[in-house]
Length: 101
Image (cartoon, rainbow, N blue to C red):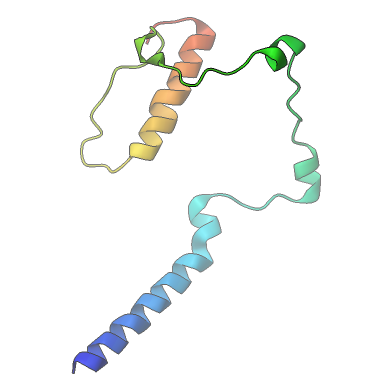
C-alpha cells in the first residue's frame, strides 16, 4: 500500500510541476521579446560625471524623508511586492517629486 501511495503522489507531483511549467510565462507575466522589440530598448548612456563616480558599498535611504514608513503586510505573503513597489517605487517617486513620504 505504501508503494502505491508513494507512486501515486510522485505521479501527481510530476503532473502538477509539468502544468505549472507550462503556465510559467503566463503566471510570471514575462513574455519573451521579439528581436524588433528588443532592438527598441534604449541603451543606457551615462554622463561622464556619472561614469566617473564610484558607487558606494551600501546606501541607507531609510533615514531620508522620501522613504515610506515600515508597514505590516498582514498575512498576505507579499514581501516581494511590498519591497519592490511599496518601498522602492514610492521612494523613487517621492525623491523625484521632492515630497516627503
